[in-house]
Image (cartoon, rainbow, N blue to C red; front, top):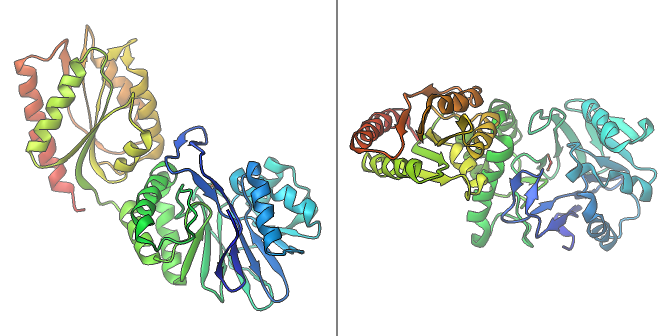
Length: 398
Ligand code: FEO
């Protein structure tokens, strides 16, 4: 992908990874991704903000060559993760006078991860400015979006905020901005997916960072993945809803079924909840894209985990999902478990509950069925659906 001009003297010089399918060996990338690096040419100094995943270094250097870059004075590192920092050693090899500008914590991590020598660093503090001539960079610490060392870089004169992963989206596209009708819906969806899978555990930190953005009033937000954001209010507004305590009248039912008994329960519960007027999303964990489930975890009022009992506990795929959900710590208000068992169902419930101990929600009485559900079991599920729907509707404000 060719270099692109954002404003006079400000360029996107990153790389697009069109067919990458997985990030961190965990997060699916249905739309590929990009690694956004930015070049800022001041009247006296030139700065680079972040770099790219090392396997994309040739594309990145081609962009710098296209722009005729002969000197880089500063490489700003907003975040030490290698998809943004991994090409810093190559930049220093080509531009040996460049200084790596970052905060103290990020410096330590860059030394650990890339074995950079001490003398290449210029360490900055909260609010410190770095003049480039007619342009000025300013740095704001933004811990936990999503590592402890993350920071934002503010280009004062152009009112552009470089937020690294924060407000980013995993999208491979030839379009620079979020402004076309073609990509607007995709940007919203993929930004939500990014929030769901990466940022959700840090909701309370994010509230502070959104307040900083409100104070700075940027014209443009330039994250390190996906498109550059011009509709700042739309995107920060979406983030504000996601990080709020508000939930939707939605129940999600992540399930596994081995011999259809648990599936019968899920199908019936789905139908009963739907009759009660709440949104229901059953997800078969064997085939579902976990990113889609995570997106619904962002604002669902309730989660009902459905599992058979196997190997003296819940199905391993259910536990794998529950482990992830426990780490994501969604704002879900109610949790419960349903499932079929052969001789002891309580061990399955305990297994799920123990795995989800970081999710602070009210647990509702589980519905367990021995073997294939019978008439009285469906009645129990109907009653369960009524009670759950009433609770969900009472707390939902979105
Ligand atoms: Fe895109 Fe946390 O790296």
